[in-house]
Structures are given as structure tokens and as C-alpha cells.
Image (tube, rainbow, N blue to C red; front, side, top):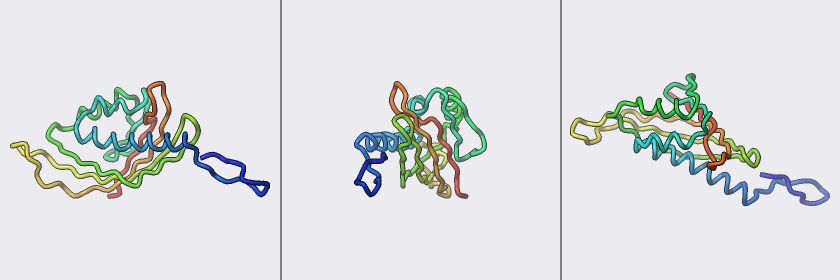
Length: 153
């Protein structure tokens, strides 16, 4: 959002089309993160982050994972028989300036080990949580610069 002159009485907030484009792009990153994570497409998932990004996973919110390569390695360590389903909602993005934005979103994680026959067993208790994000504009477009997750339980 930017200030825009309204009249001699003061200023008002105006959302520019550029801001709306940034908000949509950053919100799409949040959605892509969930889909790529659930589909175990970890290389593409890691590509959503800047080279020097920091990730705090909801399962270990006090442990910083620094750098795209370390983020990729952390996802590759996930047990191959673990199935996940991330539900994202209430995505709010605030544009800070032309190359930075911040956001927050709610998540509901359903997770279960895959049955030996490849079918999905009943999911464990759903785990609600939140993500707080910092986004940065890079030469390759908008990316996560920091993603900080935590569960509420």
C-alpha cells in the first residue's frame, strides 16, 4: 500500500496494481509450498526459497535451517512412507516496498504413514499452526527469504 494525496485534509491508503500483483505472487508461493511438500517434489520446493533463506519448520520452531541447500536436505530426510496434506488458509500479505513483503497464514497438517500396500491409512490428529513469512524479490522472481512455522498444540 502507498500513501496517495486525497485532498488538503490529509492522506489515504491506496493499493496500487503493483502491490496487488506482489500480494498475489507471494500468496501463490504459500500455496505452492503446500502442494510441492505434499507431492514430495522437494527440489521444486527448495527453489521457492532465496539462496540464503532461513526456514523454521513447525515441527522444530527453534531450529533455524539456513540456506536453500540445507532446506532441501532437511526435506529429503523426511521418511519416505510419510504422507502429508497441508491445508492453507487466511493468507495475508503486506507489501513493505518494491522488493520486500511479509505474510502470515494458517495451516492444518494431516499426516500419516503410508500403508505397506501404498494406500493411505486414517490420518493422525490434525495439527493446526501458523506460518510467518518474509518474501524477497530476486532476479528469479519472488521467493521466501524466511519462513517461520509453529504448531498450536
